[in-house]
Image (cartoon, rainbow, N blue to C red; front, top):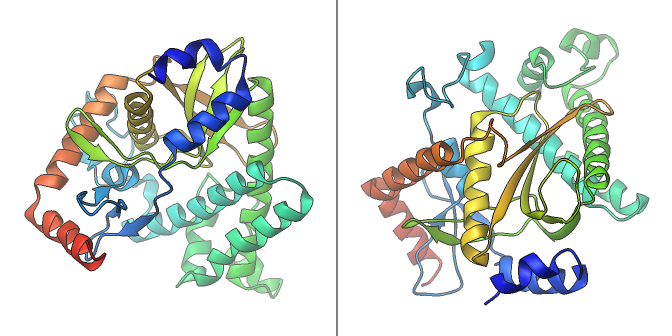
Length: 318
């Protein structure tokens, strides 16, 4: 059984562990949109398996503002002053910046880093309303040194150019902070962006953490294998914890061995970062999983969602 090797060998034989885990963890699946919904799902190569929802879309479907005030994940503000449409623009900007930061962190050399910047930031050129996005991002505390729409106009710069400049700068610092964290905690990246379709407590789902790492010797973190998620917003949010807990449990189930979780908050200034681990008091593991499990069960029990997943299954030729 795989689990009998992990605790003894991950600290002394990294090449062995990398080779073992790459084939054992990463299913190399790709997320696809579930028709006529805001959900995404993964389709297996097996004709006998139905599409399973992504961990991210299950988490995104949670209605945080319906939670009781005394729930540990009840939000302490109502939208941070943004309308739903504005917040969606902020989230899209943050996602692109975060994806760019992860790419820079994973890049090998300056040439690959330049390619990452070009390819990832190109997504900002496809934004339907860059002026509205710039207005929202300018008000958002998660981005520093953003040109206001008025400043961009005076400088004869388009909103897209202003967004790309801000995202590029922030991604570079966030990527640097990620590298610093890895070095300080002597992390070894075992698998990058694996997809891990699993069934945990009767709930099928597919997470995709940014990394799976081993930490054999850290003053602050217990030695273990960790799923890692990097976040570039100003705070670690309840949704980040719930999604990361689902990722951790999926890999724990896959390996039949203890797996911890890490969330890295990566600021867009050098040295601005925080770490939250699943062993910390601020990460209530059971409450997080309970919330994720309940929402997943609701989605799978929804006849409309069932029909759309079945539609994906048929279209894929199964």
